[in-house]
Image (cartoon, rainbow, N blue to C red; front, side, top):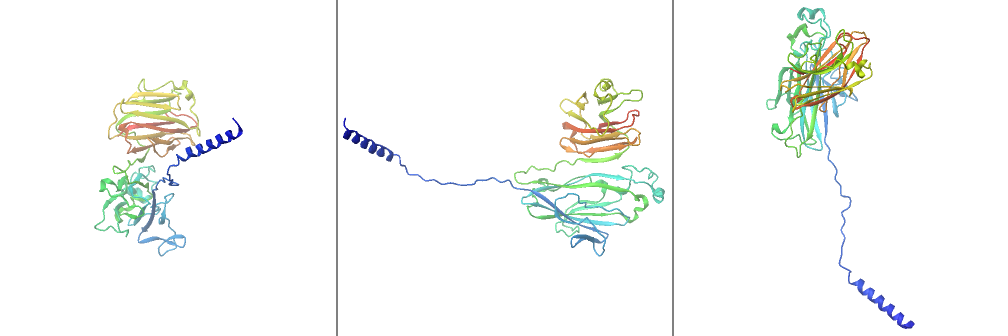
Length: 425
């Protein structure tokens, strides 16, 4: 084959390649959607407040707040914000005949929401005994928690203040009418399916009116007493949430140095041994002194000398409603189990701490959590005992409780230091 033939074959091959390439030039087009995005919406509850006291209004003047017509500062009015340390009520010189009112406004930013209000942790104290009070209250010498009378002599009315005018009109829903403040622990659905299924509209302000008064005839029995409590609001998205109900209200009430619940179903406890028994004991059951429920040999474990504060000793208490078993673990070392049976539907949790008698001794349970619900610390000092009542927990369905104990003790006395968790009513 000569050179001319080779060139001819190369040309034919090139033409063939071009012909083949031309047979796959289909019609085509490209369309592009750029930057597709899902962005979560937001729900942020904002609160503002305007308070009135004995005919005066807490008003903003420049950047400060004063009672109207005076130079006396006040702090119970604020503009729309997230709640941090604001107090709706902070009155330190209440007298018979005093009255007040708060107009609380609530706004859910951006989205419709279901809304609930909570009043919890109401506690009252005697705070000593003046000579005039002693003539009307024979028990006012006891300064402890739960001994005061002020909580029974402040009366409250709470309503939906639809026009935000701080006056309960005939067409507005009254939630609470002239009842003692001690009766107001609870949860109040403000916007919920149970009330007709209409949520709080997004970016719309609604108001709640709260009126209080101390009747003029109350007299000296309230002198020096005080009442404390917490107010909170909970908002949850309304869309795709027609089965919403307000979460339960966990109420913690400080009872002071009182006896255990009158009907005690069962108890978990950790304590120093009884007089003459110098070890540390942990137990759970219907009678924690019963054989098999109490470990009198806990001194053979890490608790031969219970750690001094500030060292915290963790514990876990679980109750299985299916089996009726209660399990108690202290510091992951000593576990006690007992079949405590079925918890009554009316049962509450009672947490007791007791301290030894040294001047600087104290017993504290802290970091307390029951099924995800945080509880306040329970503490007492130098030889005392303190009990708190916890209601609103769904104990009958089973529960898990965790926390830490801290004992400062210069010595041990009888069954102190100690803590108990009672289930009863």
